[in-house]
Length: 314
Ligand code: AFP
Image 1 (cartoon, rainbow, N blue to C red):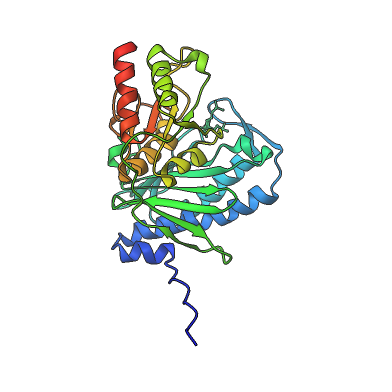
Image 2: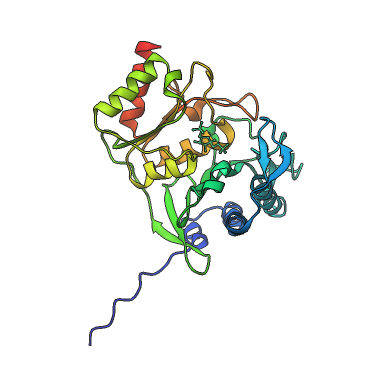
Protein backbone atom coordinates (compact mmCIF):
# COMPACT_ATOMS: atom_id res chain seq x y z
CA UNK A 1 0.00 0.00 0.00
CA UNK A 2 1.67 3.20 -1.10
CA UNK A 3 2.57 5.43 1.75
CA UNK A 4 0.42 8.54 1.86
CA UNK A 5 2.65 11.43 0.86
CA UNK A 6 4.21 12.92 3.96
CA UNK A 7 3.28 16.54 4.49
CA UNK A 8 6.11 18.77 3.26
CA UNK A 9 8.51 19.61 6.08
CA UNK A 10 7.28 22.86 7.61
CA UNK A 11 10.12 25.33 8.02
CA UNK A 12 9.32 27.83 10.75
CA UNK A 13 10.52 31.42 10.85
CA UNK A 14 13.30 30.93 13.41
CA UNK A 15 14.71 27.92 11.53
CA UNK A 16 14.59 29.81 8.22
CA UNK A 17 16.55 32.69 9.73
CA UNK A 18 19.12 30.33 11.27
CA UNK A 19 19.51 28.34 8.06
CA UNK A 20 20.31 31.61 6.31
CA UNK A 21 23.07 32.27 8.86
CA UNK A 22 21.41 35.42 10.06
CA UNK A 23 22.93 37.34 12.93
CA UNK A 24 21.58 35.78 16.15
CA UNK A 25 20.43 39.13 17.53
CA UNK A 26 18.64 40.02 14.29
CA UNK A 27 16.95 36.60 14.35
CA UNK A 28 15.85 37.27 17.92
CA UNK A 29 14.51 40.71 16.99
CA UNK A 30 12.49 39.44 14.00
CA UNK A 31 11.08 36.56 16.07
CA UNK A 32 10.12 38.93 18.92
CA UNK A 33 8.08 41.00 16.46
CA UNK A 34 6.52 37.84 15.04
CA UNK A 35 5.54 36.81 18.56
CA UNK A 36 4.06 40.25 19.28
CA UNK A 37 1.76 39.82 16.27
CA UNK A 38 -0.10 37.02 18.07
CA UNK A 39 -1.30 39.50 20.70
CA UNK A 40 -2.26 42.00 18.01
CA UNK A 41 -4.32 39.34 16.24
CA UNK A 42 -6.20 38.81 19.48
CA UNK A 43 -6.68 42.56 19.97
CA UNK A 44 -8.05 42.94 16.43
CA UNK A 45 -10.47 40.04 16.72
CA UNK A 46 -11.74 40.89 20.21
CA UNK A 47 -10.56 44.42 21.00
CA UNK A 48 -12.65 47.51 21.55
CA UNK A 49 -12.82 49.71 18.46
CA UNK A 50 -13.58 52.71 20.64
CA UNK A 51 -11.46 55.81 20.29
CA UNK A 52 -8.48 55.85 22.63
CA UNK A 53 -9.03 59.49 23.41
CA UNK A 54 -5.48 60.46 22.53
CA UNK A 55 -4.08 61.63 19.20
CA UNK A 56 -0.78 61.10 17.38
CA UNK A 57 1.44 63.91 16.08
CA UNK A 58 -0.54 64.04 12.84
CA UNK A 59 -3.59 65.04 14.82
CA UNK A 60 -5.31 61.75 13.98
CA UNK A 61 -7.57 60.39 16.72
CA UNK A 62 -5.81 57.26 17.97
CA UNK A 63 -8.03 54.23 17.90
CA UNK A 64 -7.72 51.96 20.88
CA UNK A 65 -6.19 49.32 18.61
CA UNK A 66 -3.47 51.69 17.39
CA UNK A 67 -2.41 52.46 20.92
CA UNK A 68 -2.67 48.86 22.09
CA UNK A 69 -0.69 47.51 19.12
CA UNK A 70 1.99 50.12 19.67
CA UNK A 71 2.31 49.14 23.34
CA UNK A 72 2.49 45.43 22.51
CA UNK A 73 5.36 45.87 20.08
CA UNK A 74 7.19 48.59 22.02
CA UNK A 75 7.21 46.43 25.16
CA UNK A 76 8.62 43.42 23.27
CA UNK A 77 11.31 45.54 21.63
CA UNK A 78 12.25 47.30 24.87
CA UNK A 79 12.76 43.98 26.66
CA UNK A 80 14.50 42.19 23.78
CA UNK A 81 17.98 43.28 24.86
CA UNK A 82 18.98 43.96 21.24
CA UNK A 83 17.24 47.30 20.55
CA UNK A 84 18.74 50.77 20.98
CA UNK A 85 16.08 53.18 19.66
CA UNK A 86 12.45 52.88 18.61
CA UNK A 87 10.32 55.14 16.39
CA UNK A 88 6.62 54.34 16.23
CA UNK A 89 4.09 56.01 13.94
CA UNK A 90 1.91 56.33 17.03
CA UNK A 91 4.47 58.22 19.11
CA UNK A 92 5.65 61.81 18.75
CA UNK A 93 9.33 61.14 19.46
CA UNK A 94 11.96 58.47 19.19
CA UNK A 95 12.12 56.26 22.31
CA UNK A 96 15.66 55.58 23.57
CA UNK A 97 15.81 52.03 24.92
CA UNK A 98 19.57 51.67 25.46
CA UNK A 99 22.09 54.54 25.26
CA UNK A 100 24.76 51.88 24.69
CA UNK A 101 23.51 51.46 21.14
CA UNK A 102 26.55 50.09 19.29
CA UNK A 103 25.91 46.55 18.06
CA UNK A 104 22.19 46.90 18.67
CA UNK A 105 19.32 47.69 16.29
CA UNK A 106 17.08 50.70 15.84
CA UNK A 107 13.52 50.01 14.72
CA UNK A 108 10.87 52.16 13.03
CA UNK A 109 7.40 50.67 12.79
CA UNK A 110 3.75 51.30 12.08
CA UNK A 111 2.06 49.05 14.64
CA UNK A 112 -1.30 48.83 12.89
CA UNK A 113 -1.35 50.45 9.49
CA UNK A 114 -4.84 50.94 8.12
CA UNK A 115 -6.40 50.71 11.57
CA UNK A 116 -9.40 52.72 10.39
CA UNK A 117 -10.27 49.70 8.20
CA UNK A 118 -10.75 47.30 11.14
CA UNK A 119 -14.30 48.44 11.85
CA UNK A 120 -15.26 47.58 8.27
CA UNK A 121 -13.45 44.24 8.55
CA UNK A 122 -10.81 44.87 5.91
CA UNK A 123 -7.20 43.67 6.15
CA UNK A 124 -4.62 45.67 8.10
CA UNK A 125 -0.95 45.19 8.91
CA UNK A 126 2.18 45.87 10.95
CA UNK A 127 5.15 47.34 9.06
CA UNK A 128 8.72 47.22 10.44
CA UNK A 129 12.01 48.81 9.34
CA UNK A 130 15.29 47.71 11.00
CA UNK A 131 18.67 49.49 11.04
CA UNK A 132 21.87 48.40 12.74
CA UNK A 133 23.20 50.90 15.30
CA UNK A 134 21.87 54.08 16.84
CA UNK A 135 20.29 56.24 14.16
CA UNK A 136 16.99 55.95 12.33
CA UNK A 137 17.43 59.20 10.44
CA UNK A 138 19.22 57.54 7.52
CA UNK A 139 18.33 56.67 3.93
CA UNK A 140 16.30 53.49 3.63
CA UNK A 141 19.08 51.81 1.64
CA UNK A 142 20.91 51.42 4.98
CA UNK A 143 18.21 49.14 6.45
CA UNK A 144 19.46 45.65 7.37
CA UNK A 145 15.96 44.13 7.37
CA UNK A 146 12.30 44.91 6.82
CA UNK A 147 9.13 42.96 7.41
CA UNK A 148 5.38 43.18 7.54
CA UNK A 149 2.60 41.11 9.05
CA UNK A 150 -0.74 41.05 7.25
CA UNK A 151 -3.86 40.43 9.34
CA UNK A 152 -6.32 39.25 6.71
CA UNK A 153 -8.41 36.12 6.11
CA UNK A 154 -5.06 34.45 6.88
CA UNK A 155 -2.22 35.93 8.87
CA UNK A 156 1.00 36.10 6.85
CA UNK A 157 4.46 37.47 7.51
CA UNK A 158 6.94 38.68 4.88
CA UNK A 159 10.56 39.51 5.66
CA UNK A 160 13.89 40.19 4.04
CA UNK A 161 17.37 40.61 5.52
CA UNK A 162 18.85 41.43 2.14
CA UNK A 163 18.92 37.85 0.84
CA UNK A 164 15.58 37.68 -0.94
CA UNK A 165 11.98 38.07 0.21
CA UNK A 166 10.16 35.23 1.95
CA UNK A 167 6.51 34.72 2.97
CA UNK A 168 5.29 32.71 5.96
CA UNK A 169 1.77 31.73 7.00
CA UNK A 170 0.47 31.33 10.54
CA UNK A 171 -0.67 27.75 11.24
CA UNK A 172 -3.19 26.43 13.73
CA UNK A 173 -0.53 26.50 16.46
CA UNK A 174 0.11 30.21 15.72
CA UNK A 175 3.55 29.36 14.31
CA UNK A 176 4.81 31.04 11.14
CA UNK A 177 5.80 28.42 8.54
CA UNK A 178 7.34 29.03 5.11
CA UNK A 179 4.98 29.51 2.14
CA UNK A 180 7.23 31.05 -0.53
CA UNK A 181 11.01 31.62 -0.57
CA UNK A 182 12.85 34.17 -2.73
CA UNK A 183 9.74 35.77 -4.23
CA UNK A 184 10.58 37.53 -7.51
CA UNK A 185 8.48 40.07 -9.40
CA UNK A 186 7.67 39.13 -13.01
CA UNK A 187 9.21 41.18 -15.80
CA UNK A 188 6.91 43.33 -17.96
CA UNK A 189 3.83 45.44 -17.47
CA UNK A 190 1.85 45.75 -14.23
CA UNK A 191 -1.27 43.57 -14.28
CA UNK A 192 -2.94 45.39 -11.35
CA UNK A 193 -2.68 48.92 -9.99
CA UNK A 194 -3.62 50.65 -6.74
CA UNK A 195 -4.16 54.40 -7.27
CA UNK A 196 -4.27 56.22 -3.91
CA UNK A 197 -5.44 59.79 -3.50
CA UNK A 198 -8.17 61.72 -5.30
CA UNK A 199 -7.66 61.51 -9.06
CA UNK A 200 -8.86 65.09 -9.52
CA UNK A 201 -5.78 66.10 -7.54
CA UNK A 202 -3.32 64.19 -9.75
CA UNK A 203 -0.62 66.14 -11.59
CA UNK A 204 -0.57 66.01 -15.39
CA UNK A 205 2.26 63.48 -15.26
CA UNK A 206 0.48 61.17 -12.81
CA UNK A 207 -2.76 61.43 -14.79
CA UNK A 208 -0.90 60.44 -17.97
CA UNK A 209 0.65 57.51 -16.09
CA UNK A 210 -2.75 56.36 -14.77
CA UNK A 211 -4.11 56.40 -18.31
CA UNK A 212 -1.07 54.39 -19.47
CA UNK A 213 -1.80 51.71 -16.86
CA UNK A 214 -5.49 51.52 -17.80
CA UNK A 215 -4.77 51.51 -21.54
CA UNK A 216 -2.42 48.57 -21.00
CA UNK A 217 -5.04 46.52 -19.23
CA UNK A 218 -4.02 46.89 -15.58
CA UNK A 219 -6.97 46.07 -13.29
CA UNK A 220 -7.76 48.43 -10.42
CA UNK A 221 -7.23 46.85 -7.00
CA UNK A 222 -7.37 49.27 -4.04
CA UNK A 223 -8.35 48.40 -0.47
CA UNK A 224 -7.19 51.52 1.37
CA UNK A 225 -4.69 49.42 3.33
CA UNK A 226 -1.05 49.83 2.36
CA UNK A 227 -0.04 46.38 3.61
CA UNK A 228 -2.69 44.30 1.78
CA UNK A 229 -2.33 46.43 -1.36
CA UNK A 230 1.46 46.00 -1.46
CA UNK A 231 1.15 42.33 -0.50
CA UNK A 232 -1.14 41.75 -3.50
CA UNK A 233 1.50 43.25 -5.83
CA UNK A 234 4.26 41.11 -4.27
CA UNK A 235 2.42 37.78 -4.10
CA UNK A 236 0.91 38.20 -7.59
CA UNK A 237 4.45 39.18 -8.65
CA UNK A 238 3.11 42.08 -10.70
CA UNK A 239 1.48 45.44 -10.09
CA UNK A 240 1.92 49.07 -9.15
CA UNK A 241 0.84 50.88 -6.00
CA UNK A 242 0.91 54.66 -6.00
CA UNK A 243 0.06 57.39 -3.57
CA UNK A 244 1.40 60.27 -5.64
CA UNK A 245 2.12 63.93 -5.05
CA UNK A 246 -1.27 65.68 -5.16
CA UNK A 247 -2.16 69.29 -6.00
CA UNK A 248 -3.46 69.64 -2.43
CA UNK A 249 -0.76 67.43 -0.86
CA UNK A 250 2.57 67.78 -2.70
CA UNK A 251 4.27 65.28 -0.33
CA UNK A 252 1.54 62.67 -0.78
CA UNK A 253 0.28 60.87 2.33
CA UNK A 254 2.49 57.92 3.26
CA UNK A 255 5.31 58.16 5.83
CA UNK A 256 8.86 57.58 4.79
CA UNK A 257 10.25 55.89 7.92
CA UNK A 258 7.33 53.69 8.90
CA UNK A 259 5.71 52.75 5.57
CA UNK A 260 7.73 53.60 2.46
CA UNK A 261 11.28 52.59 3.43
CA UNK A 262 10.41 49.05 4.64
CA UNK A 263 8.09 48.34 1.71
CA UNK A 264 10.59 49.78 -0.79
CA UNK A 265 13.31 47.54 0.70
CA UNK A 266 11.12 44.44 0.36
CA UNK A 267 9.91 45.20 -3.18
CA UNK A 268 13.47 45.97 -4.37
CA UNK A 269 14.64 42.69 -2.83
CA UNK A 270 12.00 40.99 -5.02
CA UNK A 271 13.31 42.74 -8.15
CA UNK A 272 10.79 45.58 -8.19
CA UNK A 273 11.32 49.32 -7.75
CA UNK A 274 10.12 52.21 -5.57
CA UNK A 275 10.31 55.90 -6.44
CA UNK A 276 8.87 59.21 -5.28
CA UNK A 277 8.36 59.97 -8.96
CA UNK A 278 11.82 61.41 -9.49
CA UNK A 279 14.24 59.42 -7.29
CA UNK A 280 14.59 56.10 -5.52
CA UNK A 281 12.68 56.00 -2.23
CA UNK A 282 15.62 54.28 -0.50
CA UNK A 283 17.94 57.18 -1.37
CA UNK A 284 15.82 59.82 0.41
CA UNK A 285 17.53 61.12 3.54
CA UNK A 286 14.82 61.81 6.17
CA UNK A 287 14.81 65.19 7.89
CA UNK A 288 12.01 64.52 10.42
CA UNK A 289 10.58 61.26 11.77
CA UNK A 290 7.18 62.12 10.31
CA UNK A 291 8.43 62.90 6.79
CA UNK A 292 6.01 61.92 4.04
CA UNK A 293 6.81 61.23 0.38
CA UNK A 294 4.93 60.45 -2.83
CA UNK A 295 5.34 56.83 -3.88
CA UNK A 296 5.20 54.67 -7.02
CA UNK A 297 6.14 51.11 -6.07
CA UNK A 298 5.97 47.68 -7.72
CA UNK A 299 6.89 46.36 -11.17
CA UNK A 300 10.08 48.06 -12.37
CA UNK A 301 8.66 48.74 -15.83
CA UNK A 302 5.70 50.63 -14.36
CA UNK A 303 7.85 52.65 -11.94
CA UNK A 304 10.13 53.67 -14.82
CA UNK A 305 7.08 54.72 -16.84
CA UNK A 306 5.76 56.80 -13.92
CA UNK A 307 9.08 58.64 -13.68
CA UNK A 308 9.06 59.21 -17.46
CA UNK A 309 5.50 60.64 -17.44
CA UNK A 310 6.33 62.92 -14.52
CA UNK A 311 9.60 64.09 -16.11
CA UNK A 312 7.78 64.89 -19.35
CA UNK A 313 4.64 66.50 -17.93
CA UNK A 314 5.22 67.91 -14.44
P1 AFP B 1 -4.88 54.83 8.23
O1 AFP B 1 -3.77 54.12 8.97
O2 AFP B 1 -5.17 56.20 8.76
O3 AFP B 1 -6.09 53.98 8.03
O4 AFP B 1 -4.29 55.13 6.76
C1 AFP B 1 -3.89 54.02 6.00
C2 AFP B 1 -2.89 54.55 4.99
O5 AFP B 1 -1.87 55.23 5.64
C3 AFP B 1 -2.33 53.42 4.14
O6 AFP B 1 -2.45 52.18 4.77
C4 AFP B 1 -3.18 53.46 2.88
O7 AFP B 1 -2.46 53.05 1.73
C5 AFP B 1 -3.59 54.93 2.78
O8 AFP B 1 -3.56 55.44 4.11
C6 AFP B 1 -4.97 55.08 2.22
O9 AFP B 1 -5.22 56.45 2.13
P2 AFP B 1 -6.65 56.93 1.58
O10 AFP B 1 -7.63 56.59 2.65
O11 AFP B 1 -6.46 58.41 1.34
O12 AFP B 1 -6.91 56.17 0.31
